[in-house]
Length: 190
Image 1 (cartoon, rainbow, N blue to C red):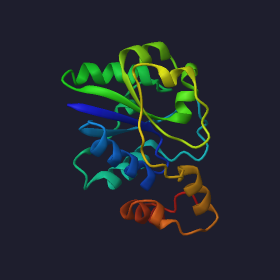
Image 2: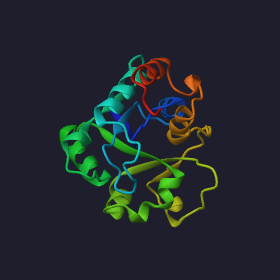
Image 3: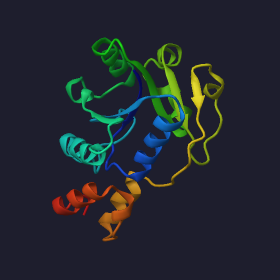
């Protein structure tokens, strides 16, 4: 099975994440997308980060009606901080019949040289890159394992949603309905 691994904090998961995953399974040849909920990105701060299992629950709520999508908590059981190369190696051992492709935004491609063992990532895995606004081209754009996709750009971010909720804004249409209901019920990000 050809599986795209979409790593993120998903703090919270929103319609932009889902639209991108939908585009990927419908237009790129990947058969499934696993949303890998990361406990801690080594390049980001933990400020305003919901509990790992709360974020996983939100992702499960968002994905439950989509059989081609799956929430993945593999990094919850791995040493912190999480490094993508280690997660890919572990998943490869656990699922030898799967072909994994890393999904990342163009902004992450620009900082790939800061990632642990980025050379191995480039040489051993396919990397599917979706466009992000105002991202400079890098030497990685031309790498044979990097595939730039023409996915629609949806300019919504989790930080925008968190800030909006904190300011008392109603952003229910930016997240799946069940996700909004749970965020509202639990008073997250207020």
